[in-house]
Length: 116
Image 1: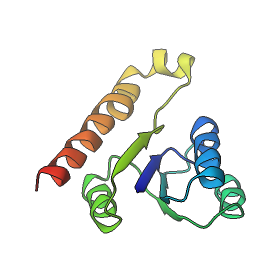
Image 2: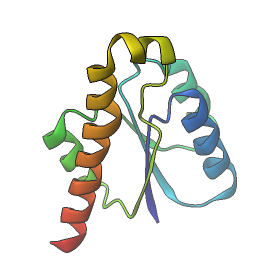
Image 3: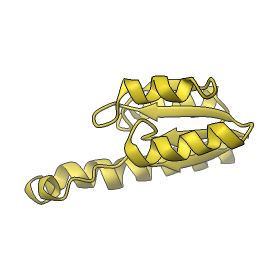
Image 4: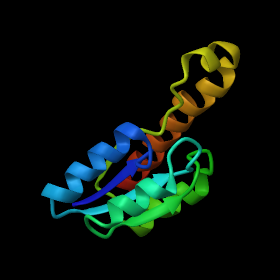
């Protein structure tokens, strides 16, 4: 199975990635823009098992589509979200665009890929 983990360099995403890398024999691709995650986390995960890492923001729709197609993704686990509550109150549009629009686009691209 080919699994894409978005936000895989963040706290929750990296813990899920760690578990999958330790117990499963799947092809893992982690996509993260490293805005809150870290390259050090990716490097640590690479020591468990090799996987593809793509530094990319979900708003780069065409590039995300290329990643889905290139890696023949079967399953997406999405942790690419903004989570800072005070900032979300100050800048709700940023949170709407990232958490809702980008996730909706990811789902749309995945479904279109399946239907083609």
